[in-house]
Structure formats: C-alpha cells, structure tokens
Figure (tube, rainbow, N blue to C red):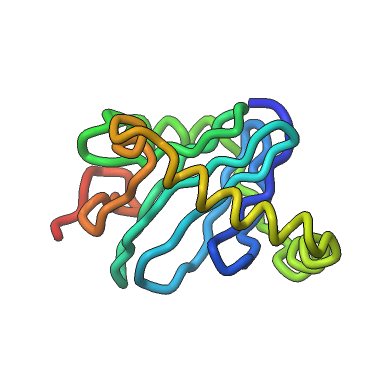
Length: 147
C-alpha cells in the first residue's frame, strides 16, 4: 500500500492515518457511521452499523479503498496475518484533527464526497463497503464472536 490517507467519519472526527504496512484502532460510538479515506485522487467510504462491545475491522488499500471485513467477504480469515504483518500505530488525534480542520472547505467537501461515494456505489460494491452489527471479530483473532 502506498501513500497516507486520513481516515475520519461523517462528522469529521479524525481516527488516524492509514499508511503502508500499518494498522491502528479507534473507539467509535455505537450507531450508523461512514468511515472515509481521503486520498489525493479519490475519496472512498464504508458504511458501518456498530454495536457496543464489539471489534470490527476495516481494510484500507492503496487506491484508497475501504473494505469491510465481514463474514461473507472472506477477509475475516486474514485478520491474524494482518496483525502479524503490520505495525501497530497510535494516532495523534489532536494533531490530525487540527490539521484537517485547518483545511476548512476542502475538508468539509471531503466529508460530503465520502458519503456521496458510498451512496453512488453499486449494490455489488456496497456489499464490500458495509459493516453490519454482526460483522465483528474477536480481539484474540480466533474467530467471529457470537452476536
């Protein structure tokens, strides 16, 4: 994966930067969210309906694109190797948020473009870009937690 893509939600809350060979985690309130990856060429997103106490995974690629790690995607089985093959990073939330906020209209447009991108996906593409409440994975990497 190449490049650095800030990841944020529909309210413009910064979660971290996706960089090649890295991973980060974020605590997110339950409910309906859009996770948006803002790249120099395109802005992509994923819609997630999250419930409390669960761990969800999103794969970000170099296009940028976001893929939901779901029961049906086949990506769930790869989570242990993602953990082993990537470096855990801790996002500097305050600095990242301040930077994005300083971009004013460009950042607001990225948020709206991200939501619009998801809405414009075909039904087939939405399958890979949607996390449902039961698409959770245990933090131990041993499988899918019971709903």
